[in-house]
Amino acid sequence: MMFADIATEEKQRVLAELGEVKRLFASRGWFAGTSGNLSIRAGEFASDSFNFAITASGKDKSLSTPEDFLFVDQNGSPSETTRLKPSAETLIHCEIYKLTGCGAIFHVHTVMNNVISELFWDRKSIPVDGVELIKAFNIWEEEAHIEIPIVSNFAHIPSIVPEITDRLDPRIPGIMLRKHGIYAWGANAFEAKRHLEAFEFLFEYVYRWELLQRK
Ligand SMILES: [Zn+2]
Image (cartoon, rainbow, N blue to C red; front, side, top):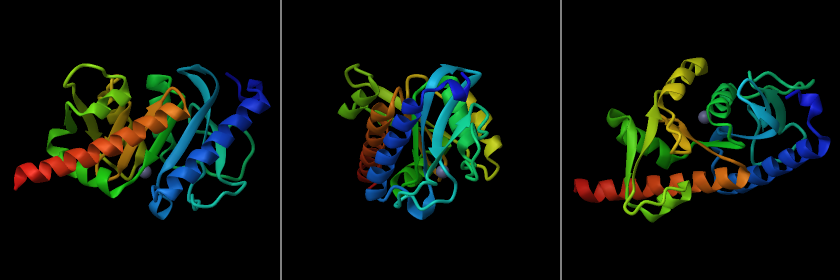
């Protein structure tokens, strides 16, 4: 869909939602050192044609300014004239939208998600067994077992993308970058937030449980 065909009010809704999520996550300390990025899609979706708003690169996310977000297309190029630069990690958002058709993607670096990614790096996934909050992912089986994929983290972002293409599990709305952070997504901002919060809860659960087992 052409960016120009997206209604103004739809673009404003997306920016307002991003602003709210950014404020909330900043209050939780989830954007250490300007890390992390948030995006919400606007308009119609085709896997080879879509637009989304994303946090601009290098901004202090605890502040609200007119330079917080910009719209980009399916290739991560700005959809309209702007001096803002999308984060280098925008390409990861592009790939996740392309693969899932989701409506929002939230990415945060936390100490807990970094620790757990290293703890299970050899396994290439984080196992979670039978925890109630797995239901946040719409997985309703009794004592469900899930594996949250972990992929390599490279300084060169385009090198990360093929591994995401390869490892993304349609059942699990998130993927971890080793010693970097989690990407979580959903059909809309509400669902992506629910998923991200569930992941962080499960990471802390698994971490604490592992410590008890290893004593
Ligand atoms: Zn990051």
